[in-house]
Image 1 (cartoon, protein in one colour):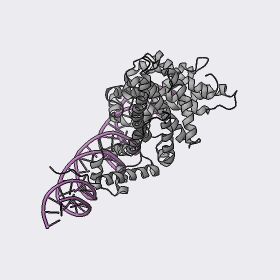
Image 2: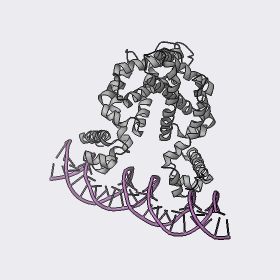
Image 3: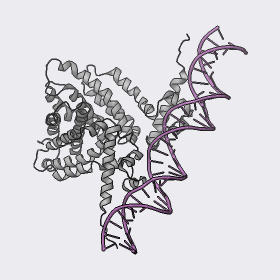
Length: 191
Length: 191
DNA sequence: GATTATATCGAACACGGTGTTCAGAAACAG
DNA sequence: CTGTTTCTGAACACCGTGTTCGATATAATC
């Protein structure tokens, strides 16, 4: 039984492929980028690509794994639960060319689904302990969590599509202002 | 100059193609349905298909033109602005197999984009006259309209994904309850 | 340095779906 | 019947996907 020391090359190849895709997205958009484009830019063989990723979509998603993990570790903690939104608005701002190239396209839908799943569980876990005190909430907790995440993504989309006319802080306030009243009323407690 | 009497066959072919697609979506999903499948079921030649529609996507969208037109004529009128939601929840309910087969997939994203554009202008026009009284609203009107439509679509999606655990009326109430407080506060007037 | 395990390379291939073309058939109107 | 419009469907060029496999390269271990 040999030791399974992870080869440094593995992580390197994945990183190079991801970087190649990101730059290509900015240049020509995700949908028009072919696997051939990616491996040419990354100087990687075709079979190597498929050894690391199931397909182009998997590679795209992997590019957001870092963000997800960072957010996951940071969590919500003692912060205002709504503060996570600010982190994400700021992340989008600092990677604007990439986001802008995807928003409204099929690739954006993929990212939204990916983000939806992750943020939903994050928000739900944040809401749950508070809700357990009262037995019944007028609005089911799951719906509220789904509503919060969707609202955030909707505002993020609007913001990017309109070339970020407000600051990340302002958008966070607007998001909170539009969403919190209904959620508080629907759940019966302050979030 | 010949008279351009619309051939009955034209409308008929488009309708048959649309019906073929809808039934195929229910059976095997939109993404797995090929143009060949559609024209086989519709008993229509390949070139005829492309004479009527640019591609598969255009055919799918055309299937929702009737709904859009009906809703457009009905408008909001003197009704409670939030009542449009009920119409749509009910429409989804009466076409559940079709919606269910699309929700969460790429095809659903397309429909959402299509609906978003249409509903946005509908809602915006409904909000505008009321908002003109006060000069500045804390939250821009466009954002509020975008927020309302996205929230509705999010709840519709949730509802379909979870096999419609509530009635259309209940969902309308939940939608109104979650959305209206924030919008009223954000715009500074009752919607 | 020799050995062994693991990654990578890249050309070749099979596959499947797309959208176009065009000559002939069919449907329809007057 | 005549002329016009639409439909037919086989054939085709095109493009991207994902797989295969023997050769090659790199790194770790002894």
